[in-house]
Image (cartoon, rainbow, N blue to C red; front, side, top):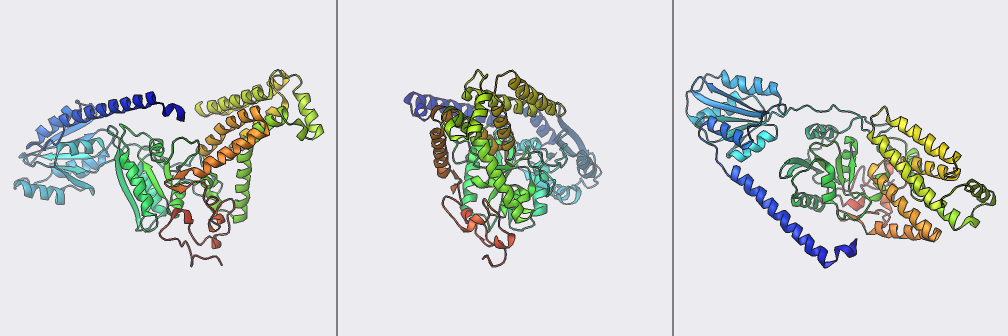
Length: 528
């Protein structure tokens, strides 16, 4: 891949594609400016309403309500149907305006009266051009135009239908909160603020996507998070130029330090308590409108194997579970490769009885150990994907049928050996022990690489693959933070919350790798 990208013809093609995309972006900007540009607000409400209807193509869901105050002053209210809270629009905007009896006054006095005495909605702001008004309408706000005033009133009336707060499906815990983040950013932010009542908690909004204009929120604690990390994330968000952002995965891929890696460099979570816990360590979080997954950065390798309940249970229980997850990761990564290496290259390293039993099981198998393992692994991946995509009641049935067909029938027919069924089954179960879905995917993909290396070079290939993987991991960075911290570079103090978790009274300082401005977590910051 690197050789292909360094090819001169590829670079010429890439430059052509970039110029082509730039021309398309410029054409879109010209169209947008031709339609809106810096078009000032017109003198009458009807002209403004007609202009916006024309710009939006006379959309059926654009509601325009025209009326007069005391039969003298014309007004127009515009909003998108089903995006606003109609009760707020009707009872706290339209009704007070229509029933007002003080329309006979100058334009400035009328504006002051409306904004200060009539409109009973808390969130209001002015708009001086029609582009701002159109953006507000598309963002689920309501816009008020008044005859004789070349400015508009934007009223916050967001109120579309949302999914209720539910338990996170991918991050279930035995002990801990059951709330999950919502697709609506204001609800997710409310759950985070409910747990983090720090006046230094900051939320900075960015609008990303030329067409979707998706709201992206950057969350951090001022005086705790490293300003360099905050600035780096802010700069990377501002550099994003894309026509639409539909999920946080868009942002995740565009802000990470390196794209040519299978390992996740930014963590995603559905849990508000997890977001708060990472903010208290000096990290930053990113919320994206329309998705219940928050992004946590910077991220290190070990945190993808932590569960929120590690900090809710006793320290010895949490330490034991972390070792179980580590063992599970090793099994999920290496067990099929070790099976191939021992069967194909190093049977003398197995106990005699085990080697004889495995040879007897493979006596009628028509495939090599490598092809046998690949067929089983691919079959399990197909079953896994099918069980996710099918409706809930059918998913478990697919798993049962797959286990019967692939496991029992394949062994009975002599297509695979009983040993490979055990190996693949244990590998699959171990992969589910990982609390992080995207980290588990990296292990699943790397497993096929180790299978190929074991088929070519035996145990030497497995060790070579491990060395390459470790070298790759130690050179990775997440927003400039070493990915393998606190092991590389070694920090003995941070090892208190790594493969083991010491009691809370000994974790008095925040992890040093994140360069927190306030390193003390509790007490004086030194272990007693």
